[in-house]
Length: 104
Image (tube, rainbow, N blue to C red; front, side, top):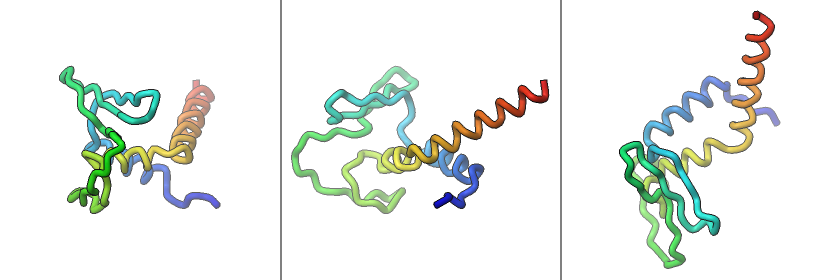
C-alpha cells in the first residue's frame, strides 16, 4: 500500500512537530529506560524516563494524548520519524543528488 501523503506534507508535519519537541541532541541509555536531550544552552533534560513505577497518565493539552511523556510532542516526533518516512526522505535526497549531478 502506497502512502498518499505528499512528501512535502510529510516534511511540513515533521518541521511543525520538531518546533514543539524538546530541542538538542537526544541520547538513549543502553537499557532503554531513559532518553535525555543535551540542550543548546549546555543543559540536559529528560525526554523520557521509565522508573518502572506506576505513574498516572497525563492528558497533554498540546496533543490531547494520554501518556507518561513529559512533553508528548516528543513521542509524536518519534512516531512521525518512522522508518517509512525516513526512507522516503532519504530516497528524495538521493533523487535530488542524482538530478544535480546530471545538470553538472
